[in-house]
Length: 347
Image 1: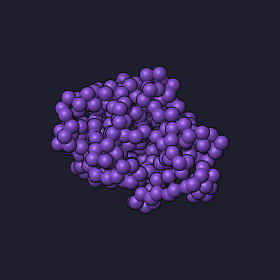
Image 2: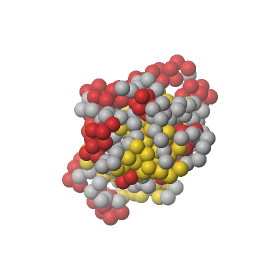
Image 3: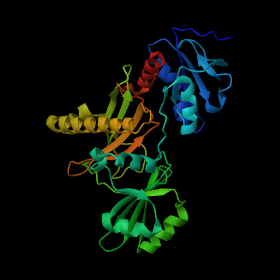
Image 4: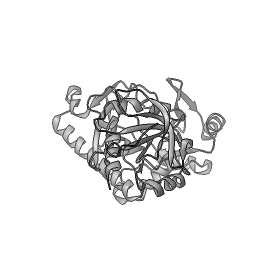
């Protein structure tokens, strides 16, 4: 029988079978944590609001073994799964504002939320829900667009569409782990193909950005931001990614490089310093915008990219990010638990 220790807060980590990769990370996160806490990994259905308890696998010592049991309601809950906001509110009535990552954004919600902030608008590609009547005009205006599943988490289903001067349309898309190319003589032919193979009323269309290239390969940036043990936003890792081709439709980049090491790729130090300042400044602006939205976020993975003119764009903000394992000094693995510990002890 578990006996609660006032000096050892209970940190709950809510997982789901919809996010198996994040579920597997729980023990790795705990192994990097240096504070004193009892951890319980549980599914949302195992929260008992009547008895104020939770059933799950708990760990009192990171060198010990997981046990199954029923513990008192956690002092703080780190969400690693989608939980409806009305349920979050119900939990917060019991433990206070100590449920974080409380808003799982779909791609369209994310774009609309960020666009409300004037300071971010210049960094957001034009985005709107896919509509057959508007798609042709959208493609004509930008010539290079991306069609994205609103609820997608990977590049599966993502299609880059290019309008040629001749009027021909070229579509690039992922099939298993390879990039495929399809060509169409007319917009009608393209739409018939797309609607038959992909369209399920849950797509959005986005202005395509031609990113800066390294040796002909597309590039982008991953910025992981976390609230730290003092409750403040901090950069956890900043990586420059070089794709294995001229697109980002295929997983497995050619290289993932900490920004400081770009000198190895013939980037000048002054340019790297300017890039780093721009990226971090924008990262903090995004975090502040989410704080002002009223949602309790503390763990974000932000995908960005510089275009060929050096302008910085926001591609996506991932509200359930995966740390970049194997990269030295990626603090996004452990900082969520440090922040959870800070919240648990906060009066």
